[in-house]
Image 1 (tube, helix red, strand yellow):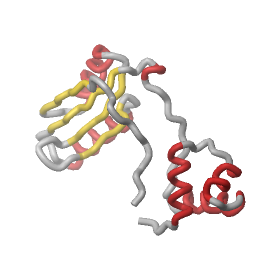
Image 2 (spheres, rainbow, N blue to C red):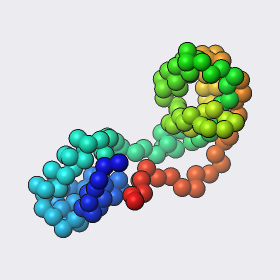
Image 3 (cartoon, rainbow, N blue to C red):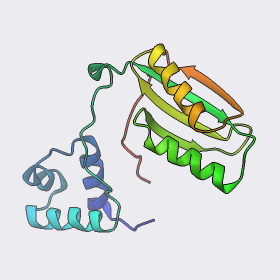
Image 4 (cartoon, one colour):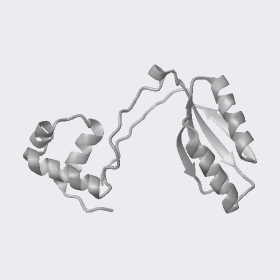
Length: 153
């Protein structure tokens, strides 16, 4: 973990909420001036605290209204299978998140697609590319909360 002072934490909080804020606005909200704020942001990027700057898009506006959480269990645990699975998952743009889990389920995937037919196409492609023991798909009926903002300690 990188040590951060109050100003760094304030900057990160502001940028996580709205990365389009000007240096003037960031300086005003942190009680500083533009040059020190610009230098702090530069250092946060160099230290890897700020990984990237992106535009967050509305999935529904892009025709991707179906969100599935996929639980994957495998009977294969060798390095070759794992690498193949990771390569396949990372190459699929439908996969928004992928996590390796402890417990009965080996992997959790968050997948965004247009509808159930598009999910089936994704599923058929996935099992054609890599051997999977058991797949359980859960359709999200409603997104209750979504945030990309990390809570700072």
